[in-house]
Length: 164
Image (cartoon, one colour):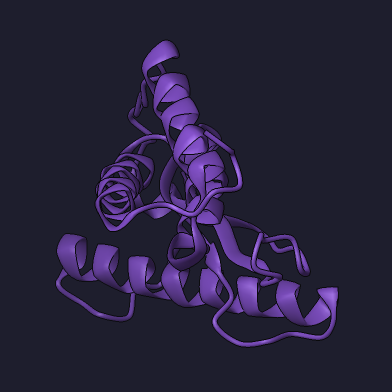
């Protein structure tokens, strides 16, 4: 079988299923595989045997390493802060699109725990790395504001917490 051969309809459905399962996994606990899965998912309509092989390699990688998330007690709510890291790249996906919205949000008070992460294709065409980076940071800030508001509402009953 030629690696560049297009997939049959049955194979495309199987690949969609594998990608869906992998997307669930990476959003729950496997940040390390997020870009690989997102990159695979962007080209689903033009997938080849090579893409199916790549999906099985990612599954093998996920099964081979036993990573686990460990959360620790971070202290009093008044000392908690959010810390954000974001990144983007211009034109790095197989279909020529740009990967952006790549960010990690940490909850910290000296000790650090990751609480949210995301990475996805930028939905609009960008002409520069600066534009991609700006969109990624904007999405990260939006999510941090949401998390801060939700945390404040859950812990104090107010939607405008004075910290975080």
